Amino acid sequence: MEKFIIRGGKPLRGEVAIGGAKNAVVAILPAALLANDKCVIRNIPCISDVAMDIDIIRDIGGAVRLIDRHTLEIDPSGLRDVEVPYELARSMRASYYFLGVLLTKFRHALVSHPGGCNFGDRPMDQHIKCFNALGATCELVKGAYDMSAERLLGTQIYFDKVTVGATINAMLSSVCAEGLTILENAAREPHVVDLANFLNTMGAHIIGAGTDVIKIRGVPQSSLCGVDYTIIPDQIEAGTYMVAAAATRGDVTVTGVIPKHLESITMKLRDVGAKVIEDNEHESVRVIGSDKPYRSTSCITLPHPGFPTDMQPQFTALLTMASGVSMLSEGVFDTRFRYVDELRRLGANIKVDGKTAIITGVERLTSAPTRALDLRAGAALMIAGLCAEGVTEIEEIHHIERGYEDMEVKLRGLGADIKKINRPDKVAAANVV
Ligand code: EPU
Image (cartoon, rainbow, N blue to C red):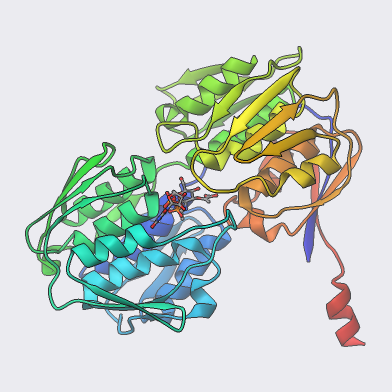
């Protein structure tokens, strides 16, 4: 069992390079199986969600070759199995993309209900609605979605709720459907656009990604060819370092980003008093922290281009040290405040009322042992720990490593006093004796 040990109080300074977008790569790796020959995918982040995707692809017969740490070659020629078992599907949300891919490839898919972070109710109804609309039947058998279709026929789908997962699955399952599919009230996240660009490079015909109406004209599966593709930069990894720079009152240039994707985060940081300089030409943003207390603010998370729910915990961490009372409302998930108790351990003053966190700023945070309850909750603790007086410990860091490549190495590169250590696992030790 590994944990992070952070001695807080050091302003972050310097440059940090951002990797490929987790939520794009977890859609694009399965999508590569739709090609008729090998794909080379670049700018792959070295995170455990990617390792899980590779395990699934290999389990169903695809071949994955590591060209270098950030480049993979995917060969779909040996693909034979339509089943993604519980042991593999349960560890990540994005395993649901194999439903769309296998349905297109084989007209049959059997994929266990996905796992992922616990944000309360995370239904799959919009995914199923879309598979059904295309002509597939879907039954839940022992916790797995068993779907089959004789033919997939283009259709019109109106999503009752803006959903990234169902929008992506709709593209994956309609890309070779006969005729035209129109998705309305579609998600507009950068990773939705990245997947559409990837599929189009393979030979698909998708227009409108990035708007709320996406049109997909089905193409024969035989016309989808292998491509060489580079994943976009991770908006949330970038946003996390931006907030960390502001929170520690540092001066950090976040490089290899698309500043446009970061606008809602940039605006919120400026709103509370940090300076953010966008450099489109050099694909970077520089965040200069304020030496005065940050201003309180109010904010609601919304689908893109709104303020991302995946930045809510990190921003809460920053606001715990702002002056006055801030209100941060969750507009995407049912509950995403389970982590506030961990911030309270560091001295944060937060009350949660339904879907709103009411944060009364304190002068300083103090260190404590904590644990990461999910990916972004872990990132929030990293930020709080970097600011807290004394030594903060963060356990259950496997959650953080699902989505951040070498976070402690990157933070050390910015001057943070952080190390990763192996905590002796008492249960394992007891078993050895
Ligand atoms: N929803 C439904 N029915 C559905 C699908 C979704 O009601 O069939 C609801 C959800 O319960 C939620 C809302 O719609 O209230 C939005 O869910 P969405 O489908 O957009 O989320 P997701 O696909 O489950 C992805 C990311 C999350 C990110 C959300 C929102 C991946 C693998 N996951 O989840 O990423 O928070 O979109 O942007 O892409 C993270 O990276 O930390 C993370 C949790």
